[in-house]
Length: 311
Ligand SMILES: Cc1cc2nc3c(=O)[nH]c(=O)nc-3n(C[C@H](O)[C@H](O)[C@H](O)COP(=O)(O)O)c2cc1C
Image (cartoon, rainbow, N blue to C red; front, side, top):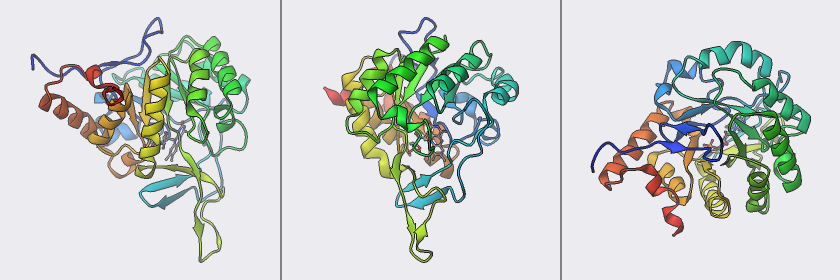
């Protein structure tokens, strides 16, 4: 190998400013809040990016407790987009992010197309924010969220509306709770998404047989963790084949080998969610593991590995 492996990736090649990450390892939305407390226990500045908790126009309290239940190699959550609202995010969190080296991407959620666009407009020109991830895939809210992500027309409409409201790079996050993920991916690509991330959680439930009641206060929740990795990997493979924008893989990544599978399936970058809850240092472990793999196989640029399993 001629020099150090180059792990840089470009998430928005069609955007005038681009969205260049120093490496492909991203912390998924909903796992580390706004990254600030998490930054006290993990060296976040070395990561590729951090995505904050889904953010709405006004603060939300979220769903009834209990909201988390462990399942076989997975986690069911029904948090329901509890968040501080976009104004507090701009006033209190973005000024801290502005001093960080690691780019922060804001996960945007809403109940109507106008609400999504209004949140995006408010983020316009705010220092400390490097991009928007549009959450059209949350299964845990009664209005908005996933309903936009399961209908190609609505998915395109909300993507166009947000694209018109922002000059930030726009990532659209897809739901796996559909029969044809490619159809939704093509719809949001056509409507101006700079990149596509997938997958959000799969709808699921668990029952406490002693109580004879559903375990979650909200009855239904979203399944994440290792249990969903093969589903996520397949969907990333399909979407990367069908579209021409960068794809960000997410779902059950728990080690560098998992991350490399997603990259070989066609992901330009990856997000780690649930597995961070058991190992807060996992982002850096995955980064080091990818670096070791590249050295071992004499790979100079990570981009050489993207999609190689599709050939
Ligand atoms: C507790 C929890 C909260 C989440 N909150 C959000 C959210 O606010 N917005 C979002 O787009 N995804 C959210 N997600 C989904 C994750 O970002 C990710 O897409 C999903 O968990 C699959 O990845 P994983 O298996 O690595 O966790 C949440 C997941 C969990 C477990």
